[in-house]
Amino acid sequence: MSENQPYEWSRYFDAVQGLPPRDTLLKAIDLHESAERAAQIILPPGHRPIAADLGCGDGRDTLELLRRGWRVIAVDSSPDAIHRLMDKAPIDQMDRLEPRTQRFEDAKLPPIDLVNASFALPHCDPADFDDLWEAITRPIVPGGRFAGQLFGIRDEWAKKNPDNLTRTFHARADVERLLDRARLVPELLEEIERPGKNAFGEPKHWHVFHIVARRVP
Ligand SMILES: C[S@@+](CC[C@H](N)C(=O)[O-])C[C@H]1O[C@@H](n2cnc3c(N)ncnc32)[C@H](O)[C@@H]1O
Image (cartoon, rainbow, N blue to C red):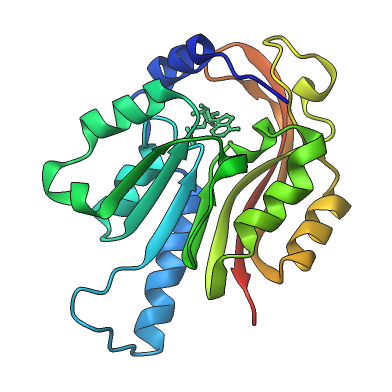
């Protein structure tokens, strides 16, 4: 089982401070809003869609969900992440935020409209990944979505592990199988493989799947 170092994540939170929400999250919110408009759904007064933000970090995605009117269960194993998130969350939106200092492997989710996991699930131990995937995708309601990233097998960290974190990597066929098994139909399945930089500006070869997928009945 991986034990992530709080120090490492605090350095990461400093490095990504102030960055905008992830494109996968924005696409999932936009798709949700247009589906509601298209269906001309009359929602009961006070109704709010509900999302889980797994590995929420200091809240770049959670804060956007709150701003767009969602209720959010924000899960991160790093106490520093949750402290930073709570410092930033607007006071008048706090009643829609459920912060959890918890491993996402242990998170019990209610029926949910969106599971968002930006650059987070690859930090699961490979031996636990299939159980995690089952546990986080089962609560997604029909018409609900998964948004986030998985790492590809040619990602540099699959060979070199500079920071001693245990990570899971997937081939494209694995990703397709995972989506299929969870009855998630991709609306975005973008495989990016290219040289780039890590959060600290150091060179790194990335192989990443960017995913937005919709649950079918
Ligand atoms: C690369 S950061 C991504 C943070 C944020 N989602 C973003 O897009 O910037 C990964 C996050 O996952 C959290 N994390 C790593 N392993 C975790 C686990 N097993 N359970 C919950 N959170 C975890 C870390 O504390 C960190 O905040």
